[in-house]
Length: 244
Image (cartoon, rainbow, N blue to C red):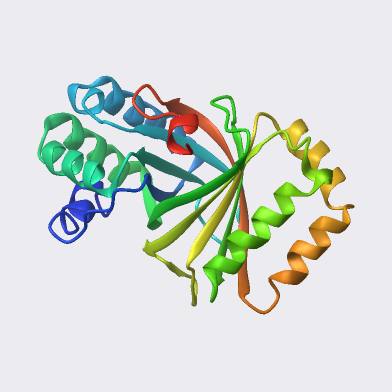
C-alpha cells in the first residue's frame, strides 16, 4: 500500500501551500479487517508520532460512492501543506508509523488519494458534524462556482441551513476514473436525519434550481459520496478551525 510518508515526502521540497490542507486516503477493507484498521488508527494517534501531529484525523466509513470499491477513508486536516509535509517527514521510519503502515498493508487495499487546498465555507461549521456529502467536479471557471455558491447561500430560502458547506481546489491526486477533477464541495451535517430533512426542503426551492442552471456551462459533475465519521481526532485541528 502506498504509504503516507512516501507520498508526502516527494512533495516536501516542491510545495509550500499556506492554506488549510486536507489529505484524503481511500481504501477497501473487508468486514473482517475493519477492527484491525480502527485499532491501527487508534494506536497511531495515541503514539508520540500521532500526538506530535499538528492537525486532525477523521476515519470515515463510506456509505455510498457509486462504482468505487473504497469502503473507508482517512482524512488528515492540516493548517498548511507545509505542516503536513513536515510532519510526514518527521514521522518517517518511526516505529508507530511503521506499525500503522504494516497494518494498513495487511488489511486494506488502496483505492486512491488526493490533496486539497481549502478555499471558502458557508453556513455554520460545527465540530459535531459527523455525516458528510462530498461532490467532486471539474470547473472551467472557479470564480463562477464560488459566485454561484455565494448567491445560493445568500438567498433567504437558505437562511435556516443547519450545516456547513466548503469548497477545496484539488491539484494533487485529481484523477477521478477517466476524468480529471478540479474541486471538491463538501457539506457537513450533525446527523443523517438533519441531512435528510434539509435535502427534502432545499431541493424544492427555486434558488437550488437556479444554482444548478447557472453552472451548466462551467461545471462537469463527477460524482457524490456519502460518508460518516467513525473516529475523529481533532485536538490539534478541528472542523471549525479548519474552515475559518
